[in-house]
Length: 199
Length: 199
DNA sequence: AGGTTTCTTGACCGTTCGGTCAAGTCGACC
DNA sequence: GGTCGACTTGACCGAACGGTCAAGAAACCT
Image (cartoon, rainbow over all chains, first blue to last red; front, side, top):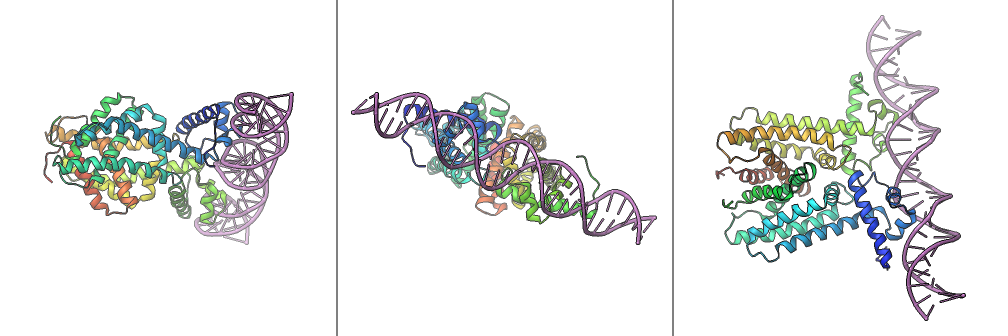
């Protein structure tokens, strides 16, 4: 299935399917959610699903793709005008935590997708984009002598790990204030990458 | 199904099933692996499976339970005689990375299990034990004035996040030397929790 | 109004799933 | 060698799965 011409009504239906599937996948899991579950929830026939998507797989990859680009767009927007590389990292973390708090379903789907052989490839591609963004800022910070000279890719992954784990635990499970949680993540990460005390 | 009396031969069969299932679950995923896959790989009839386990579910929970206790036992052993709380944290991290590098399948299963509604409860129980261990050391370190006074539970989760992400990426995907990877994790985490420079 | 394309229906298909069970084999102990 | 519980077999079950498709409805042209 290549791109298909869709009327406005068709576009809306497609988005309904994506939204409905996202919610169900996040709640019940990808594999336990059947195509029948999705169309039943929407109250339409099964053929509707296969008019817009060629398979359950394709739909899920599409959800992941859209979510990843949305997340990155948000991060880029929040960072765009900041000249200080260390502050860019901080803003990137805050944007990520904020986005994840507003898109709990998609965040949940990310966590699952990296554990599934079928989707890990797509996830790693998108994730490496995020890592590369962070790496660029870290290299700048190192070049400016703001932080010690270390492997920036390792640091980027470490920051990603802290952000994921803390967001999952404190924002999604304990429902704490996202901004306060982001504060804790930033604090740990900036010390972790070796920024001299300032906070 | 409560515990069942097993002859030595029965015990061995049970362990074969666990080992076989662990490998398949880690490779293909839990849901896509059928009971038929497991018994076929072992070359036995389907009834064998249901002689030892009451369901696919129960088997998976059993795998997770055993793995979690094994991992914790390893960590406790490596730490037991260390009086310095900061060093206990370091040794705990090294033990975790080392264990994960030796049990790639089980580590993979952990990552999946926390994303699945059906198993997240069991996972969080075991994980909170690990977190509590770390919290105790962190509290000691704070009490001794070795690190700043911060929420030790947050720090423990942050350390867990860094360890998981870095281990997944560098040990399991890039096959780098586990000890060198552990070194990087320790470095980031000790700075993250605020240990004054010493390394 | 007629014709063309987009969209919708839901019965249907072949396959596979988790799980059961009557029947049989095996080894250990008397 | 007989007996008893531990183990094994594999055909079988109903339900559910992802996916198909002929047929029809609705929207939109001219």
